[in-house]
Image 1 (cartoon, rainbow, N blue to C red):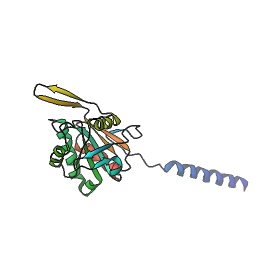
Image 2 (image 1 turned 60 degrees about the vertical axis):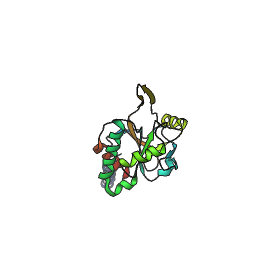
Image 3 (image 1 turned 120 degrees about the horizontal axis):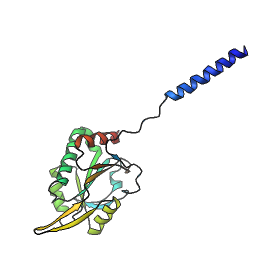
Length: 196
């Protein structure tokens, strides 16, 4: 009788251990972009949008934010990135309302609010261009570890700058970095994961 009780306890314990081993913790999202979750930078921003409204990251809580640094005279990288983000917006359908694309100029000398107001809607009506004083822009770029520098040309100047997009989740936390040229399908995949 004692032996039978021991066997029962042994098998019951084994069954509990096996059941515990089968219950898996939920998997972390399988991002295709560079996961920068927990980064100690990219936590604040204070600039003016192309409608003249002062903006901080807190204004976009509840939305996934795609943040890109560029300039309106950019011949390739900047418009290509905005076209990719416009494609993402189209593919998201109704969920596009939960994504905010922000374009921070690294050329505040030329990219006034008026210029950005004409430039941004060419890609999507919800995209916001952000600008500010030279100091404000430099501070924001430093916060997001963005390099930019004016390069003088015989006919004026251009801007060298880091090319990539940061993506923040609905809580305003920096989560992903997308290198230039990853393409709209990859951006869409990871943004959908953050929207879940």
